Image 1 (cartoon, rainbow, N blue to C red):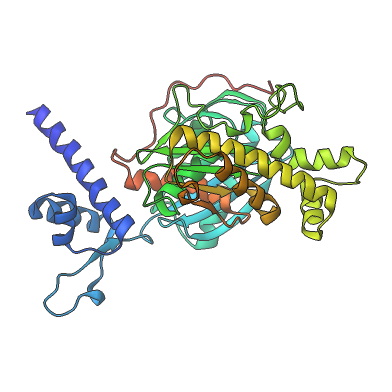
Image 2: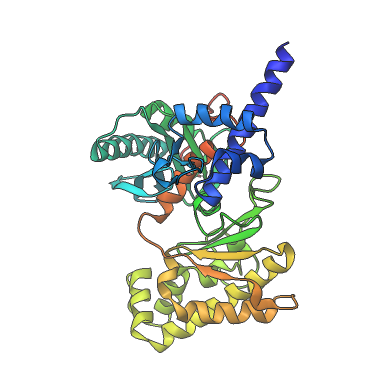
Amino acid sequence: MRSQKVDQRAARVIHRAMILNELRRHGPLSRTQLAQRTQLSTAAVSFVTADLIAEALLVEQSQQASRGRAVPLDVNYAGHFAVGLKVMETRLEAVLTDLSLRTLAGTTVEYADHTPQSVTAAAARATDDLLAQAGLGRGRLGGVGLGLAGNIDPRSGLCMSSFRLGWRNVPITALISEATGVPVWADNDVNAFATAERLMGRGKHARDFLVVTVGRGIGSGLVLGGELYRGGRGGAGELGHLLSEPGGRLCECGKRGCLEAYASEPSLAQRLAESGVGLHGPADFAALVADGDPRALALVAEAGERLGRALAQAANLLDPELIIVGGEGVRLGEPLFAPMRGALYAHLHAPEPRRLPLLVEPWGDDAWACGAAGLVVEQFFGDHEQGPPARAAPPALAGPM
């Protein structure tokens, strides 16, 4: 009897995910259409949708029904909310979104240091501030999503390593969950961005695509077979650390010749500064590019070509349906993208290389945090039961590595 109950529960979870994802991808559908698309019985569809309506996850669109036609159902994107947090070296960027990842409120919390304790305290303050801005309590808050640079175990919520933050084996989701009183999910920031693109962005109709971020670093997220691919140890997608120049410039990872040492915004600014141009960082470099400075443009063109070659290698290996490019570096515009496209299509092993779309994602200050909110939204649409990930006993906090 117990086995039968477990099977029924598992089937119900799968059926919920099937129905929610059909509506997420295709918009309002009637119960009959859902039964046809999912190949579930009409009774099963009626049973599951009744539960989802009661949980404020679905809504009937009676105003769209015409005479003699069934009432369409749609996802109730405004029925639940998510907080997304992006951990930076000097501040925490935070947003409150609905289930469509539409931003409802935003805030920035600065800290004197980025120790786990400081980030945890900032996360609690940011969550309270966002809910106060929106006039909401915690009742309809699905949880908090956390995106940060590093190697993250999303099941345990453990930050195994982040050389940018100086963290090792930090149980960051357990810390923030205790401080905020809600479930917390964490992942590498680029994986979080890829998750958001898979759920609600340009990748929601694709099963195989590559997300690339250009800015403070160079990263990528791989969606294969409709699921985020993390690799055997969670380190998949380190595009920025592909070898671009044997024995070349020193990368912040400690190795030489990485793509990131030639194509990230800080590396471009540093290289121009080494030529004698006075700069105060990537923003100054971007301004020179916009003004048409020839030395800056030459460096950007080289970076674009290196990126395009790296993307061609990844595409030749994985055969994605599309590539989505985002990150702060999109502000460099066509001086970066034109040589990137040229190198990509020149080195792509395909009969018609230009049939692989290279899409540029407009980038705002809240984009990373919205990606992190996608980690929460994923829990509503995934084929698993909602709730926080399993947590091991938290190890002792670590200081800088």
